[in-house]
Length: 319
Image 1 (cartoon, rainbow, N blue to C red):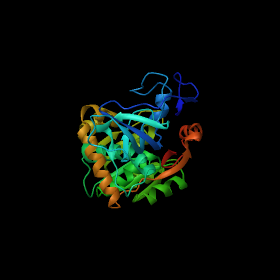
Image 2 (cartoon, rainbow, N blue to C red):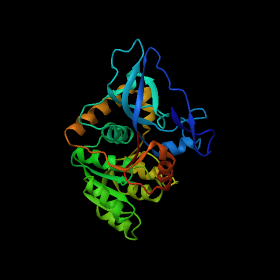
Image 3 (spheres, rainbow, N blue to C red):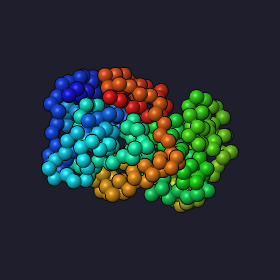
Image 4 (cartoon, rainbow, N blue to C red):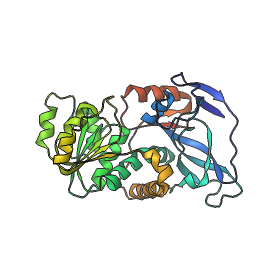
């Protein structure tokens, strides 16, 4: 099978022909139809991700496809079943093998590209906002980096939970994408009047912060008492300044969130979230935004687009 491999941290991706993996007794083999890319893939390629596997490695953390073989001990899935899975790495290939209990059965209403694209970003937004930030109907949520895959998911999840959603992104075209995802307000963080525009909508109950830096600092400053600042990532390259005295005086929670940790310490919370999200998709409450699709043979170009930070929504590799 064709795979896109990274031989060493920071090296250029190279195509390689590898044997098709066979499942063990408790595993299933999946013919990959779609793989969604994430910023974490870039960190993994550079050797900077918190859970980077040994090199050489194949990027691609979330996939969807069809089971083509199963181990003798597997009874939960059959050959021909359509499934999605969070596999950590290995998605930029034609086949993957995973433990059967990590394969999520798919309803007929969802296509494989959408199934691949919704898992990490939507489970991140759902668990971060519903479970960790305890977002309630009628509260006000600020989403930083709202035009990317993670941000658009947070806009939709915040709306589905009944919150008023303020989307923050750069540029009018990206703000329009956030509006279409059901944002109540859309603010351009590159606008010289951004701070004033943000203050006009304050105070906030929660901040979903995948950006950090000055935007994260500005949003945190205007949280109401008992507000929650959820740290998802630092796409700006800088950390937000969260002053301890400010947190203390206003009883503000700072909440860290790492989706990959749930697969180890609370896999049932992750699987429950994914099933809830499939139900919401079936009911029309969420619709993952796929901004760009590439065939597997153009996966290097797809990674370059991800690195450029010019993509809106998710980037999906199809086969």
